[in-house]
Amino acid sequence: MIVKKERKFIPATLAITWETLEPLFKDLQYRQIDGVQDLEKWLSDRSELEAALEEDFAWRYIRMTCDTTNKKLLNDFQYFTTEIEPKIAPINNELNKKFIENPYLDQLDQKKYFVFIRGVKKALEIFREENIPLFTQIQVEQQKYQVITGSMSVTMNDQEYTLEQASVFLKDQDQEVRKLAWEKINQRRLQDKTTLDDLFQVLLKLRHQVALNAGFENFRDYMFQALGRFDYNPHDCYKFHEAIKLEIVPILRSEAENRKQSLGLEKLKPWDLEVDVSGKPALQPFKNGQELIDKSIACFSRIDSYIGERLSIMKANNFFDVDSRKGKAPGGYNYPLAETGAPFIFMNSANTFRDLTTMVHEGGHAVHTFISADLELNDFKHFPSEVAELASMSMELISMDNWDVFFNNAEDLKRAKQDQLKDVLKTLPWVAVVDQFQHWIYTNPNQTAEERTEAWKKIFEPFGNNFADWTENEDTLGNLWQKQLHIFEVPFYYIEYGIAQLGAIAIWKNYKENPEIGLKNYLEALKLGYTKTIKEIYETAGVEFNFSAHYVKELAEFVKSELKMLE
Image (tube, rainbow, N blue to C red; front, side, top):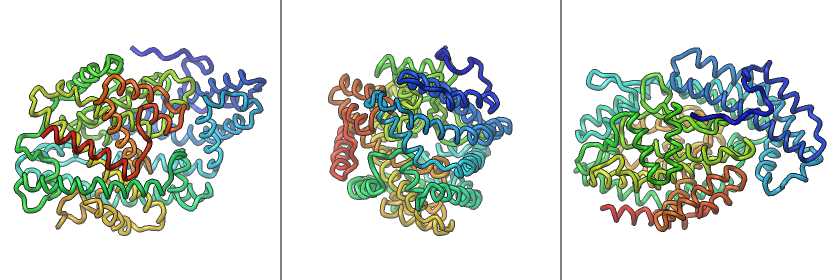
């Protein structure tokens, strides 16, 4: 079992209520600091309190997403967001001021604290007290997305399925079965189109007001500062979009043409995109959630004993909820438990190949959580998404050499690797579309739902519309954005997947050339947490922080060559 570090500042059994928290925050706010050692002790105490609060919030979120129908779990989550967070926010701002204005700040190790100090200064710069109640409203509204989508189900063959479970039918060799499943899934989504449009309209208005309050023209520009994007700007994102359009879209268009011919179809319809063109049944790498966990542990152990042991620890502590069921929130995540030093993995497995890749993806995040757990300050473990996703997406590729744990048939193993590498390329246009769509959304805040739908279609079209014929299904095409949880819950958290996917390909390339050095560099980068800049972390991993067209082409050629060897 995991044993938490002994607390030195806060009580060992601290009930998380404002009444118990306020004296601790007041202590930090008014404490006398008479030297650099006092300042570091103050930082350590603040870090301990923040870690306890983050873990408490984590469990509230985890339990709520595991059962969105449970009103008590929802109320527990909302208590934190409405009664605790709004009271902490202004004091945290005062603590940030106290730190930056401290006369001993310059005596701290500037190399060690550079990234942290930079982040605190940026937080001070954009903080506005009038945004506190808006953030509370946004938290409450965002959660409605999970309640709405978590209740979605369809009936196939007289049996009720969650949408994740029903998606298995999209891999059926019978086109009529695929079409029926696709239509049922998307008709169900369209039932709540207006409800989700209305919800998003509320979120859009609230987020735009946050930006205006903080002195920004729009929420896009505000979020680039709030997310600490010191290493790139919106113009760089547009260059990424263009690079993907130029170098990746033609490859996928050609692949779609091959798919159409292999399936003997005149037109590739949206329900023809997941079926295996070999004519063989869908890959089934495991039978149930428990087997997925056990096989993942075996797979990770083969890569490195330390990595395998981390998942074993999670299993022993029941830090997994992997099976799909009605009432469970959609999607998947790895949620770090800040005090415990371990994470919780949540996902919606329907026993498909996609669930295997989700598990190794979240497993990469889990390793990152463990390997950075002993960093001195809690803030050092708040790595940016460009780094977090580098950890997870690299693990998807590094783990492939050990997927025979899931597939004892050589042909199935080859198919799995081919599907994974094709998905690596398919990820990039979708990331570009979702990111560009969000740029449009937040720089056009007075849009209507109808204008938003048209903007989505206009942006998606040059990237191929998934290279399918959408005739008679225009409503579904225009509504695809609603299935992307990030747009509702974590705005602008998406370009990171594209940036990290490029980095992950480069890490995998290094790993294939020299597994020992490639893995060592990868793990050394993860150990840094967020104590170095993004560029420095990528360099430690042995790769470039680069998303130019030339680099995209170079990495795409490598993936194509690996696919060629699997033919």
